Length: 337
Image (tube, rainbow, N blue to C red; front, top):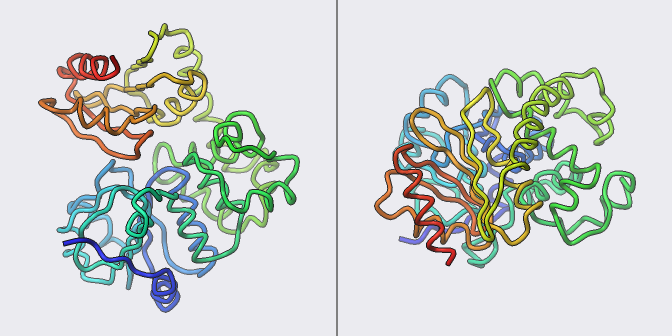
C-alpha cells in the first residue's frame, strides 16, 4: 500500500497544538536545521539527535521513553521501522525526502509522493512550514547540496558570507557561509552532551554572526576540536592516489565519524570520480559514497555482500563486513567500466 501524503497545513496544526513534542532528527546539518526551524517557531519540545544510520529501529524506543512527549516528530531519517511507530503510542509526524517509506499510523510528508524526482532536503520542508530563519534554512539546504529558492535574500542580507552561485559545494568549501555548515555538522560529532551544550545559542541566535563571531563560545570550542581531527584526515586523503574513475580512502575509527564530510570535500576536489571514504569500526567498514549514480552503483555492488546501505542518488552510505570490503570494491570497479 502506497504511503499517503499529509499536507503541510496539517503538520503545522499538529505541532502547534502539541504541548511537548519530541523531535528525533538525523545527526547532520539537514536534520539539525530541520529541528531548529521547528523549535524556534513553536518554542516548545525537546530535540534528540539520532546517530543510528540509516535506520531508526524499534530498539530506539528506550531513548524515546526517557522523555515526556505528546507527539513525536521524526526528521530526515531514511528508514523508520514500523515496529517503532507501533510502540510509540502517540501521534507520529514523519518529514523526510529519502525514498518513500510505506508506514501505517504516521502523518507522513515526503515531496517524492507528489513528484518522484523531488528530493528537496527536509530543511526545505520545515522552512515551508515556518517561513522564518532563512539563514538556518540555508545552512541545512546547502549542506544537502541544494541551492535554496531564497538565496537572493541571503545574499542581500549577508553579502560578506554568501555569493551567487548555482553550485552548492562552491558555497560549502569556498565561501564564509560554508563555515556555518561545517560548524553545525561538527558539533553533532561525539557525545550528545556537546549538542546539548550548544543548543541554547542555536535556539536564540538572531543571525549567523552571533555564531561565527563568538570566538570563545561553546560552539566554536566544539567545532575547533573536531576540525583539528578532520584536517589531519583530509591532508592524508589528499596524498592518496586515485585511478581514473575511483578514489578510495579508508582509515581506522577514531573519536569522531567524519566519512560523510570527508567524502563531500573529496568529491568536490575530484570532479567526475566516484569517491568512497570508509572507516573501520566493530569489524565493519562504514562508508560514505559520492558520485553520479552512487546509489544505483551501491545497490548493484551489495549483491551477495554482508552489509547494508542506502541514501540519495548521488550521495549515500552504509557498511560492509570487513572481510567483504575488498570484494565490495572489486564489484564497484567493475560497475564503473
